Amino acid sequence: MQFIETLAIRTKGRSMLDISAAVAERLKTFEAADGLLTAFIRHTSASLVIQENADPDVQADFLDALDRLAPAGPIYRHSIEGPDDMPAHIKAAVTSTSLSIPVLRGQLMLGTWQGLFVVEHRARPHTREVVLHYSGTRTGPPGASVAPTPAPVRR
Image (cartoon, rainbow, N blue to C red; front, side, top):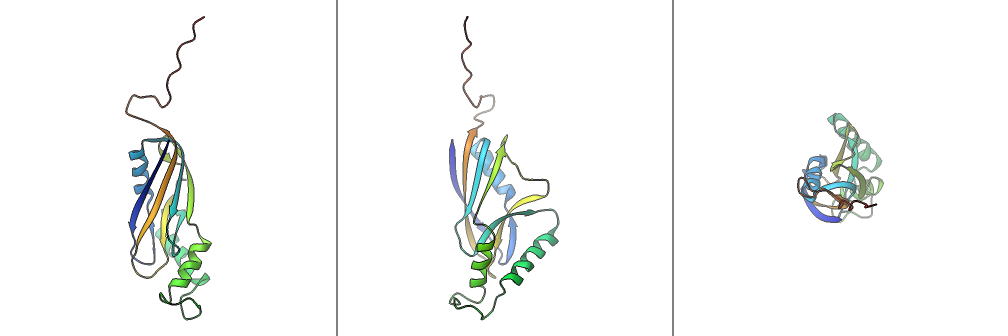
């Protein structure tokens, strides 16, 4: 069974937004059991990462490290959309536009301190689209089995 849905995520400008709970909620709607979830962001200046979700300093350090890797400023040929646009493209390229996460018993198989984040690389807020594609088994209504029960073998 497969489900595809697009989440609209409103960012606040340069930031990391944990979307783990929103994605987990969609898995419930899909009645997901066991399978694989692929998340894909439809942008070239934002990205997806799995990162620590317990200490906000990790997120700040992560964003600062990306700024050191690709600083904003008049050093790029592509500048028509502003001094933060080309660095945002570079940051998105060195992180991820898609991630695959195993799903077991309807739960994302993330580690204890892991969260699924949208990383906004631009300075101003945007609405970002994250496509979720779940492929796997379905739980169905309460009490229903995932697969048909085989008929008893008569001897």
